[in-house]
Length: 299
Image (cartoon, rainbow, N blue to C red; front, side, top):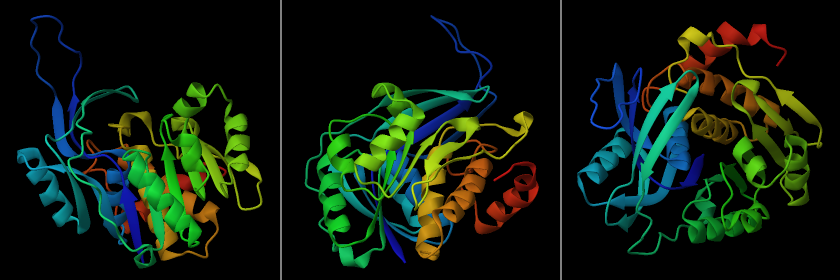
């Protein structure tokens, strides 16, 4: 079973520091990690780590950061369909006390069109809304063929409303609710109105408010990882998306509650590790997270 992922590529530099230097000050970070980044990109790597076959349409530059990213993709057997850009995009991430500050530099000036792939090769599509023309083209094409389409709605984009009209599973962030002046419940009603079969709003440690195949609204609580074990929450949502796509590809007839329980454990693993690569769980890691923490919550 094969999934197609479309999103923007970053190289993430994540640093653990007690404070941010100001002016001419200097300081030394306690730890750091360098990894692949980007919402759908990280989801693709997470799905591949969990055994799914993942194809990825994303921008890649012919610079040394681009070569690093290409090597990472080959290592995890993520099949790249690169779209050329002049420079790689970069994120500096500073996790602290369960939050994370992010500073980004991005090149979105594509010098060529994206690859035209045959939808019949795939059983799922996952998007983050970046690369808007490609996202809309493939969402329309996959939805018309009855192939699952999934969206990570991290923020409001010019094509969000149109794109949602072609999405089966929409899991969005609180930030999108704020940008659209909607409550969590109001966002779920909106997603239903756009024809999303499954919809959810993630809210960090509060878990996810979502509706299932019958439209029943319920809350999926996050797993109670002790605060002293939480290192880096950045990328946890991306791993969550990649894990539920991987679960769907493995068990397409399972209920979405089962896919989300699996993904919840994957994100619980991620937050205990620094950087996206170290935070990619295996199937065994997810089983361990469920064994450690699931009994403590009414799932």
